[in-house]
Image 1: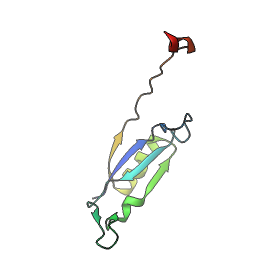
Image 2: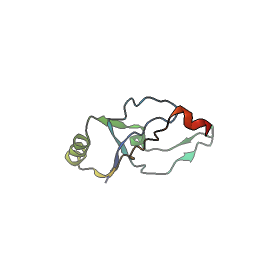
Image 3: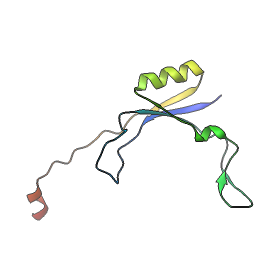
Length: 93
């Protein structure tokens, strides 16, 4: 039976924007470990579901899809945002 993870993307640490952080993603768990290709040395496996990432507008829509398709799933809660409020003058204390 296929298992999947449902999660919200965290904010990109390299950017200040929050684009696409409100969408939910369904990703399949790897069915087999990756192994190096003997010719090129690149890591790969025969599991093609590793390449699939489905986006949903809400958590409920992602859960409904997983239940409709008969997928076992786990929902990973989004990390809580912590605001660090300080003024510019605090840099010189």
